[in-house]
Structures are given as C-alpha cells and as structure tokens.
Length: 208
Image 1: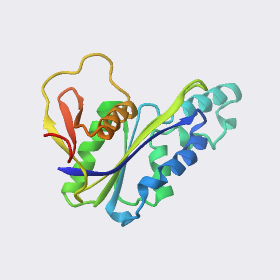
Image 2: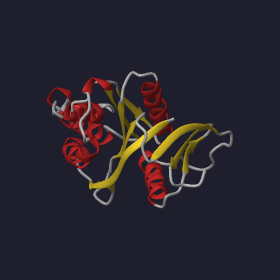
Image 3: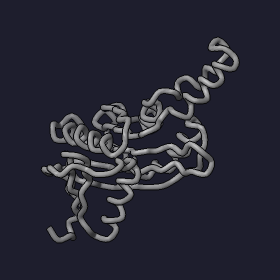
Image 4: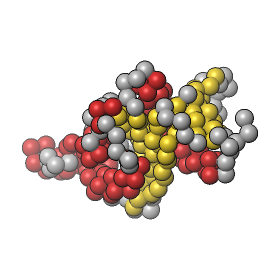
C-alpha cells in the first residue's frame, strides 16, 4: 500500500513543447513542495504524444530545407523522454526517471514501477505526471500529477486483482486521473483499471 500525499490537475494553451514545459513546471511547483532528498526521489512521466509536435516540425523543416539546415534546437524535443528530463532537471530530481508512452496503460505501468521503488526502499517520494499535449490551437494540454510516498496520509492506493477486460477506446492518462480526482473530491473511492491491471484509490473517510 502506498499513500497519495497531494494531487494536481490543470490545462494549458497549445504551444510548442519547449514553450509548454516551463509553464507546466510553474504549475507543478506546488506539488514538489516541501522539498525532499533529490537522490531518494523518483519522477515518472506518462504521455501519449510527447515529442510528436516537435518531431513534425523538425522533419517538415528537414524535408523543406534539407537535414543539414534543420533547426538543431528542435531535435532534443522530438524525443518522448524530453519532458521527463526537463522536469527532473527543473525540480532537481536525481533518483529514478522514467517515461511511459501510452494512455491509461502507461499510467498503470508508472504506478506499478513507482510503487515498487517505494516499497523496496529505493526512494521515499515519487511523482507521477501525466501530460497529454494539445496538437491544435483549439485543444488544451491536459496534465494530472500525483505525489506518492509510504508516509500515511488521507488517501491510500494499492493494486487489486481485476479480470474483466476493458471495452472501447483506451482513456488518456490525464483524463483517467481527472476522474480519480473528481471521486476524491467527493470523498469516494475509485479504481484505475485497464485490462487485467487495476489500482484502488481510497480516501480514509470513504466507506470500505
């Protein structure tokens, strides 16, 4: 069993990755307080499309002008783990740093690995950040973040057995977290699930 110390959700206007990340860092700052030992901390980022927009811009420019003249500043942002690297540097997290590409299945993988790192004593604090980047001006970049530890708090989380298969399209990681947060604000327990993997999220005041 692990504990949810804090959580945060929000949205940002569509912008290139290198513009969005500093704004995201500003919004996430509150969940990284109070500070903890950076070597005993882990950051786990989940995104279905990190790097996509920069990749498109980079290769469009390379095709138009030639690879030798493509803007090299864009290239680091084409990598899916660029947001995780940027956030780790920004917040000084020097423990485990992992990026999961996907939707709710990536979120559940992040929960599994961060939970293992906590219970095995590798880290004391874990942050999971799910960010789905807007691709057009009409869309919003959505993000949800969790701060986890083994320190008892008002909300606990644990993996549970689930055998029913998911039907329909997979949810985005940020959307799945938004639903969890809404349940918590109403004092209700809820389940994050995809295929055979599931996590119970339970506020201490909820009925078991």
